[in-house]
Amino acid sequence: MAKVLVIDDEADFREVIKFILEFDGHEVVEAEDGQSGLNAFHESNPDLVITDIFMPGKDGLETIREFYSLNPNIKIIAMSGGGGTAGTWHLGMARAFGAKASINKPFRALELKALVSAQLFNTSC
Image 1 (cartoon, rainbow, N blue to C red):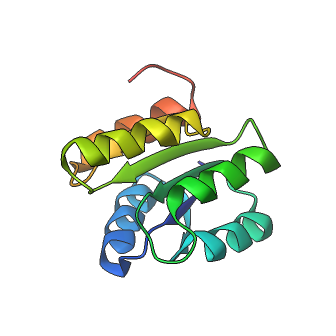
Image 2 (image 1 turned 90 degrees about the vertical axis):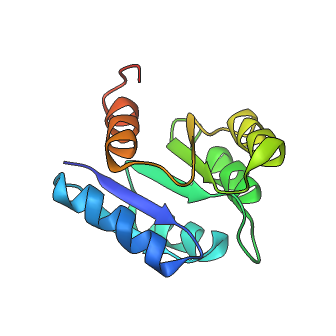
Image 3 (image 1 turned 120 degrees about the vertical axis):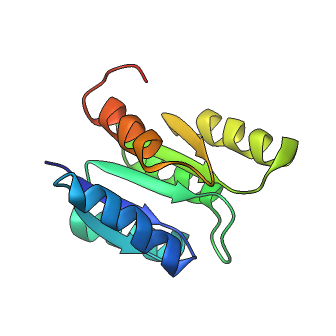
């Protein structure tokens, strides 16, 4: 299937996403923050990036901007558990910076799988 880079500072959350995506046959590369995500991006050349917005160090918005400047065609899903209008605002900014889709945490496995498929296969979700 596809190679997916998952960037989130919460190791347990990355593991859950990895389990869901690997069950569907995807290869998953993990990173704990924006800078390690950029390093993994260069090393692994993923088909899709899923990144959290709120992380220490290089946050998700800055990371998305860098990915987009490296490859404007990269498929990026932004995720946030920021909650309320602040989280919604940040996900909107992520789309403005180059994310193709966004998802609020927590989410159901089926919701994530549908969003990943839609991005990888250019279908609507």
